[in-house]
Image (tube, rainbow, N blue to C red; front, side):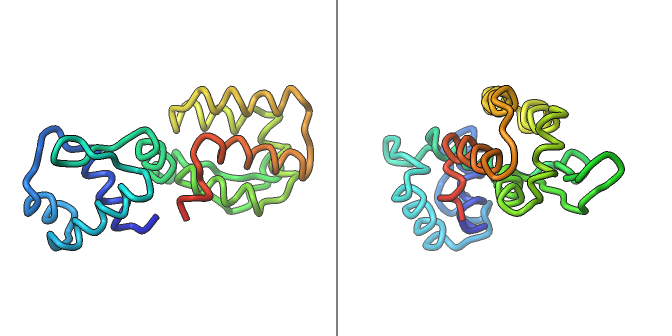
Length: 166
């Protein structure tokens, strides 16, 4: 999803009342024509739905916002290989987290999974206890290595369609 689309989606989500097109376009730093194009594209991609004569965010749009909205650096997920062995990788969004899970050492994934770090971050910071619970199931199943990586990617993408957000 392009940054412009993210900003439009966020503005629609944050709107508390109907807004005229010019005011909306100004809020998202686009011309009215550009705003219309972005709204139409978001609707075509299934992130917005028609509501009367306007558009509203749907569940897919809300999940996309959740996956793409950054947290502060301090609240980001900081990958380690072991205690006192940081990898120097920090993710601020669920989308970034997903992308790092694709690349980080599987030893790091195991380290964090079996300490409960993933579940804690996803539940406490991203406010998604349901996804955290699903990840706990991977721990119970004692997954390791590439099988663990694939399972983490699968459960995150199953809920958030993260692959679609690129």
